[in-house]
Amino acid sequence: MARTKKNKDTEGEILKAAKGVFQKKGMDGARMQEIADEAGINKAMLHYYYRSKQLLFEAVFSNAFSLLAPQLNKVLNDDSSIEEKVKNFTSNYISFISKHPYLPNFIIQELNRNPKFFEKIQQTAAFPTLEKFKSQVAAEVEEGILKPIDGEQLFINIISLNIFPFVATPLIKGFLKIDDKGFKQLMEKRKTAVSEFIINSIKK
Image (tube, one colour):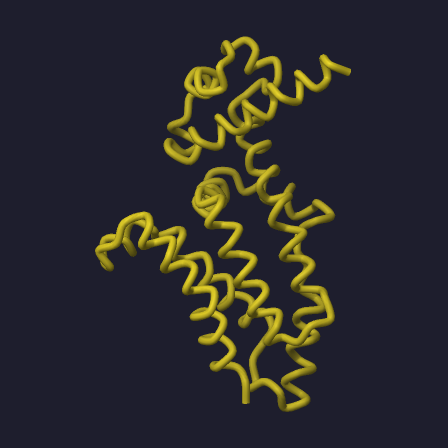
């Protein structure tokens, strides 16, 4: 049992180190030796746990996605109103990405580099489903609560407004002349700003 715990501790250190290196260097720029050095192990030990950089990248990505996906799935499929869903989705997403700022660029890089990996992620049970959300949007439009809008278009609007600042962080910081602290404060304010913007655009 002690050995199992040690193995888990080592694997945890590897994933932590890999996350940092991938965040700084990207998938293509990261080197297994650098990850091993960051984790405090030799390269042979790293290859014992992960035979390739691709497998390690997928483990880091899957680990982070497994934390976010259930939260988003719960918000999209609970019984709250669309207005509450917009608020909760935005708050949960921004809070999560603020703690894992590398993730949006990870996703975009990997989609461009290896589309088949994302197909694997889509097949997992935790991958967010939109059917209830789309049906609920249609129902609230029919009831006169929302202006006419397609559920898929609304979801894309929500995702776009939440993701873009994290993908374009250097650009936004440059335009607004803010540092890391200022950017974090700005993202915290966006939890309300994005929600209100979307809700005001769709409510009758």
